[in-house]
Length: 402
Image (cartoon, rainbow, N blue to C red; front, side, top):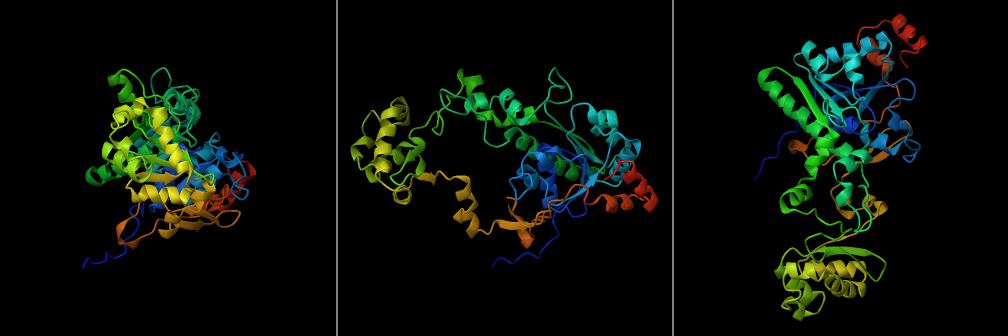
């Protein structure tokens, strides 16, 4: 028998993170740290806070981006252009393990909140600068929104149909940078545990997404041609696409080798002769005859409803999936069976949220804290850095804290 491990504290319990952050890249990175037990103090502008708070009102009156990226944090609202507000951040950083910022290029340095400056003053601090294009080079000062970086990194060039390139439907550049910032912090914490020293971490959206472009980038650089845009189809494998079913659904299937093609032909298409026909027997032949190959598959699946089509494909050992909309994802039976949904608190009441995908041994569960209101923790944090009631009142009166 395998002994059950005793429940352990979350891995980042005791770690304090201060973040001067906005939009998605830095907030999504620090949310991962919060979920793993870190205390994350989010520094926001007094005039509306993180501008992602105003993107929409789709999450029961709150912005969907903000709800997604900011649970489990403490919010303090400060005017960093006022020396008193900046002094509060410096006091917080002096007690922190990690500092993260994704301000516009040069803004953190002007405030003395760039990684190099802070790490020189605090040798144990891990300080992360997240930017669009990096600190140097001709693009350093360019504005870098997610869609723009998707274009610069080439993602848009390989996404879409032959006629129309499209951006990804999620902020892929932001997410890529966030996850490299997250893993960079974890690596730096491990190093600090060995050496006793922190240090700067730099992550750019362009470099993060360019790394994710590895397969098509290498295909183009070393093969001489970029992969073609093929919509839901695969550029070098056939059949590999989504096909309509009789009930209005769409089922995607992927044939990875010629043995699977023969099984598909016999057990789903009910055309066993196609398995050995030279025009379709190999993947190269099927790609060359993609239109006709897809016609065979579409005809067979189009006579079935989605459930029956999936059952036949599964029975034949063919990889397949249902093309789901977002409502169907929210009700996905696998997520339900694995109990991946929780509720988190927010200023408008409880909201559903997915557990983070890192599942830890020992039975500990991610700390999915509340989504904070703007400045919800300002007074508590000001008291924590040693400010008196009169000093706090003065900051509020002068519009330095909210």
